[in-house]
Image (cartoon, rainbow, N blue to C red):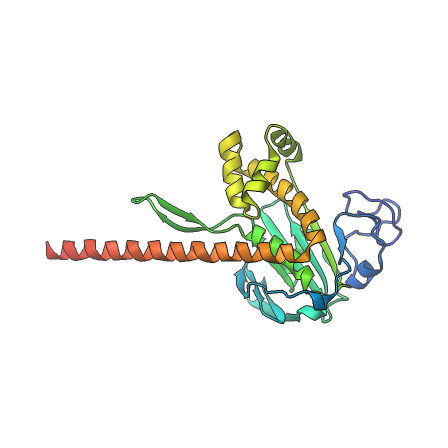
Length: 294
């Protein structure tokens, strides 16, 4: 990353070695005026006329960790529990968005942070303090178990929320103002292991077969390579990130289409889990009825 104050290349360090500026500690206004110098995590909107884009977002409420994001036709609502007894709800019209930051952390959580006309001068905190930012949604990187029945061996896992919010981040580019700043940052702990695993397999296979569904690709990678799920997940994220970044840079609507596919899959799995739960409840009711007869 480049220092927003003096322009020095700071690499991955949080403080500039030339002037001492904290790299993440700047406002949206300063970020908009900064020269990116090809920085891959500082992304500007492509020159696309908004009138040419018809966007259909999968509206609904998407839960995070002690936070949530609701998507509507003209606005989004961020709800964040910033303390034990304080929940802040913020309504942000899409045309008022100033900046969106997506961070996939190495500690099992991701974050989606918003700046808009109502808080554009609020400094962006360090990543470890994102959870306390009122307009931030924090996302667990683990998929929830929707239903499990050991008797029938039925196991239904939810769509990984990090995958969902990653695509929300990219889809918002299609409807945010072209002056809005979009930045994405990925933190990886085991990059060397990921590269070693990737060198032993056909990485193109996973994207061609499973995109945009990363969970299925992770399962396939574990099966084909015998790798631990954590390393397989990082490898799949690395592969998909690199390819989708290029695809979405050329076609804004590709991200929206993929988001709709992922949201539809999430809804489908919940319906299956609800049906399995209904069947299990009915079986239990019959068992209890027979026991009462005895």
